[in-house]
Image (cartoon, rainbow, N blue to C red; front, side, top):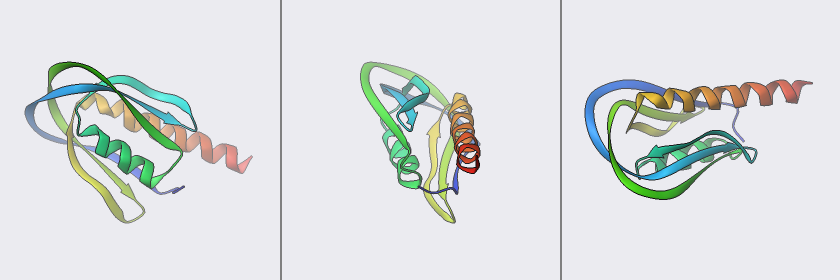
Length: 113
């Protein structure tokens, strides 16, 4: 477990990508985000988040192929080490970032009670 997990978004030029999965993010085995349509490269995002803090686990279920636009990059850092740098994604991943931040905030409050 790493209390220094940081996940953030940056703007990027619009691109079109194919999605083949529905992904769901869990924290301590509780769903905190999803399911949401995602690209196969999102597996790397799930791995990076889990490697930074093992309480997070992302699952993937196959779905029919869809084509969707990406306008953001998402990155993951653990302490001073960047685990994932600028993965192409949607602006709606702001919800994933918010869910991670909220889960960490709640866990910290519970640990101090």
